Length: 281
Image 1 (cartoon, one colour):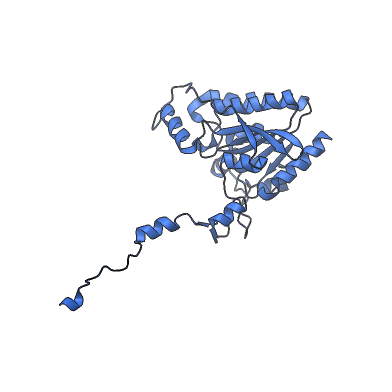
Image 2 (cartoon, rainbow, N blue to C red):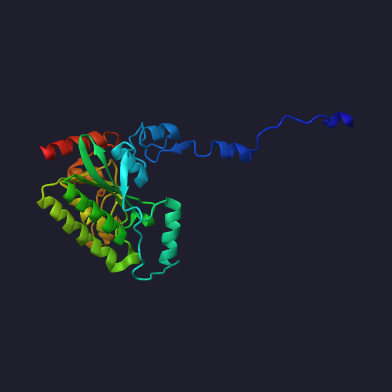
């Protein structure tokens, strides 16, 4: 029976769990062409599929780094909601805010900063979709309005990148007021002849689309972005008509005059620099 017993220790091999941990997250499946992409290659290409040009969603900080080549100054980072309605659904609003702040590293659903694009000093805001769906509450309205005021004070261009589900229901009428607040601030920017470019990404919907996202001197979008006010089902039930395929995607909106251009992520910074050169001159 000793023939069937191992007297010396065998060779150590990694378990299935070890193999899973070591390879987890190295590959990504493209939602456009369904190809498997090496994550590092995807990140080096600004999270755009090199095969089909599908634009993966990116967070607000990565967006700001892309706009300003990673050199920028953040403003109003400590603004937080006061929970004006003492709202509670499946959990208290304050608890939901705390959980979002811990998971995203941001105080609310927008980042505001200043940096250089080409030869221009530019103020920019980028919305964070992971923070309660990128919803617009009092903090989002205040930070964007302050960015407008900085642009007015310094006569500097403004860029706002939208990625949102719309107004934040947990703040009720306070969130809806931000539509008028930001829009009136942008009117002052327009009267001062200071350029404002709105960038719409996937998705841009609800009250944001109905206000500042569509008020730019240029309204541009990423390829394939979902842009609209209400969802297709709600619209079909309201007008009682079947809607065309992809009618809320950026390509359809450009073809029908609702947007000025579609710009791929890799081309965004040079496009903005040329646009600001045009406006300033």
